[in-house]
Length: 306
Image (cartoon, rainbow, N blue to C red; front, side, top):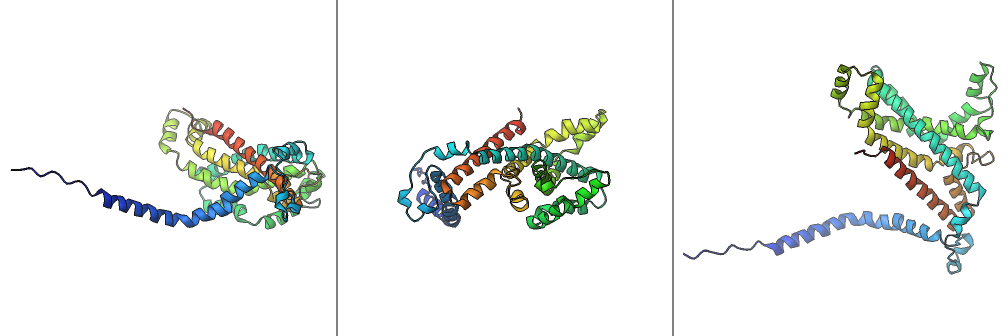
């Protein structure tokens, strides 16, 4: 009896099906890819190239008059006292605002997760409300609080303290905006931290309590290590947001007084408004590099430890 050779699998048909599935997938992805290339990747590449030229408003009708200037725009930025001041303001905003926001948000999240039983939902909604509130409405409220005859100075007056004109003081204008930004962003981190706290195993806390660990020891040795990925995520998104802070000085102080609240993002915005497109592009990429550097530092400090 002659044994029959096994038949080879129908590879061509399977291959055709695979190619068909790939084409269908690319067809569904094509609208997004086209939009991304036209409205995201294209402008990003164009702005990077622009930062190495001397393009201004007057060159829009005569684009062939644009010259390649290399790193000249970047060099001019760091000898521009207004840009250096905007970087220093932004650095203070980040160095003070990010840790303060994270600390207060974590404290609120801990209270809502364990300490507050009644009206927990009401507190959560109350802390998150500033996140979804219009910056214009927030500005009106905070101007009423911080003006010379506002609520804050009235409160200080009860203790015999004469408060300053907070938003017109070169000393207090930036701290006032930091306080406003911290209050506005606590709600976002509170929600993130609540999710992280609910992922900490209760059995670990119970075992530590049996061993005699107090609340601070459990927080430092159990809660914080377990929440390291959550803390990293919160630090990165908050750092990026604070490095790009624009709405607060734009609405409240217009960068004043005497550039005391001028941010790097607002400086870049102003340069675009003046028609200095290449110079503004260079400023935006300096800010981008600052965001990358801060994110790398945060990953180094809060990333996974072996």
